[in-house]
Length: 207
Image (cartoon, rainbow, N blue to C red; front, side, top):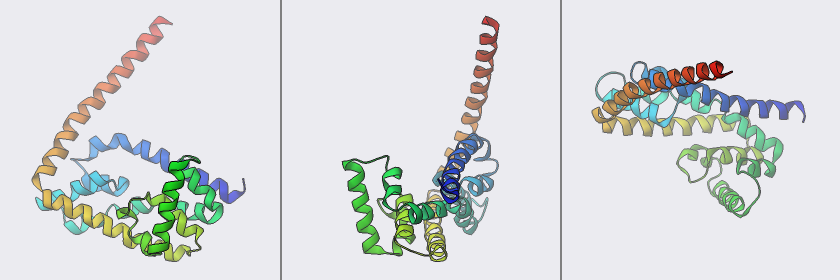
């Protein structure tokens, strides 16, 4: 692989590792620091949680709508770049290899790209195709990085705003669910740590 290919692959690996590393923080932050959780993860649940907390007066709806944008966009440029460098090969890789199902999904993505063009990036979160495929497709199609980032930012803001509004409409019920999840998930995490420690000690004792 050339240097650019190594950067792309390393970026994908870093994105996967980051998601795994941040997952244990969910129960610790979902109730105590929901804004920080949305900022670093940008997940659907964290954005809806912030929107619901805006409804009960704990934060602002505008903040709930924009905090998750940076983390959601963090690695999008990698898929654009992969499409630009690898062409059709990246689609089969993202779809898990060649096969009829992959070919059908690829054909659907191509139709969406041809029909919507740049709007496919703006509507990526709302279309029935993985966003990574759309980003790779426009990269393969020759869209400039600056144009892609502008459209991606617009589409991401639309998505986070919709999620925040959904949480705002749910209101107190969503807040109560998040708080209950934080309470019980924390105890489950503590129990898991204790179980792992006990298992390790028992294993060392047998040795």
